[in-house]
Length: 602
Ligand code: GDP
Ligand code: MG
Image 1 (spheres, protein in one colour):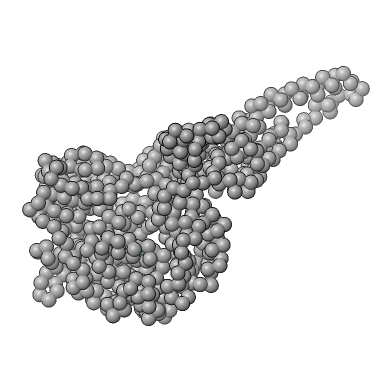
Image 2 (cartoon, rainbow, N blue to C red; image 1 turned 30 degrees about the vertical axis):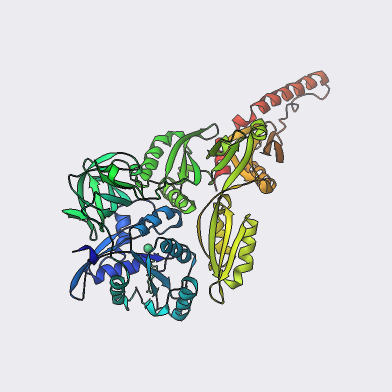
């Protein structure tokens, strides 16, 4: 099949608007999978093959006969989740166009808006598709009006379908062929290949999903990665149809898979957005622009409840990390909680999916600290440090004399909602230190609101609160908005004046009093009364912001004594006081580990 009869496209949609269902219909329509067979085959395969914790992109090629000629259509799936924006961008980069899919009953939502702009900025041709027209609540005219007023997409170009019943789905592929341009590329030039996605296979090692921009690739070729400089020998190439189907070669314009022999061992070496070429052609080829290392923006620490479980837990964390190239992992140890790990994620959803998986597998035997975000310290010398572990945040003398500026990461949140909730949503954003960027009505009743919000606020269940404030009617998408200067300070929990290392957090100064009171109250609940006094304090910088005291039992050493035996009585009381002092000095150590665990648990 010549290049002019290739089409690479993807589906741009808000979650649940029917991307997977429509993909299945298209695969059935082209005979790629059997009709009425496995529902949502692309999603199913994910789970069956345990391709990792995220809803991973899954791509498929289809043969389609249009007006007597065979076309090779590559449907490139995109990760369904906002943390993977860099990967979504790569998927778009491998396409010439996209179906912009909107649920007829819900209309345009936050991810429709955010993904539209991303696709548009990549130069993709967009074909509007309105789905779920079978629903009684469907309002296709309203959806078409939104598509026109928000994206300037003409209603007469739109296809109205039901992916569920299959109604009008056959109108889509002719539009894809007529409106979306064929890929360009020269198969005689040196190899230039973009890494779009990857997954791990126990036998083959890491399998790479690639888009060939120039040249051809076949088994036996020696290739090299621009990002890592590592060299590999190609073991097999092929297309996803719907599973790995080997081909003699892949050439310019195509989207397919490759793996190496010997196989690529670590998912980390497969960097989405990386460019590969043939060994020897490095100088002749421009790597694809815009490659970025994934950035961890949300961190949690994890500790086994029982240190005897450490090895076992480490194995399963490693297993999950093997499948997810975007998780970072460092060892961490805490006096209170023992040996554990600090895990870094791309964003909040990424983090919570991973956490769910660990909890499912390990349940109560695992402590996971609440998520934190990195902070940036600009020193008086001009040097900048990004701090991932709050315990390492400068405080005391270092904090006051050596630091020029502190910064925290912000995101730009896109929120859509019916107008009636606008007041509540604005209030929520303001409480969360948001800065309004824009407010637009995209129909007479639907609003798109853009806010800059500190990532630290977003990780504190912002989405849950948003859903609560709008009875589930709001949708949220966000993207990185860089660093901003901030009034932040390290908070520590002190037990009898000794800081507890596992419990420090960096907090905005406007919140220290509230957080401090919460901390001491919560910790007090979990500490049993002792033989000695326990003082629990929350300290922000060097200022104590909250305090609770747990009174000791007054052990009745006098009970057996005769009331008249005054000198002896005094002596005993002295002795008891001494004993208390001693215990006080080492007080924090005798507190049950359980108390810390309960304090940290959500
Ligand atoms: P995705 O998140 O975009 O991949 O959405 P899915 O394809 O998983 O669909 C989300 C839900 O909408 C599922 O329960 C589907 O069965 C349902 N759905 C998808 N298309 C239609 C449709 O045309 N009509 C109706 N009534 N339901 C649909
Ligand atoms: Mg889906």
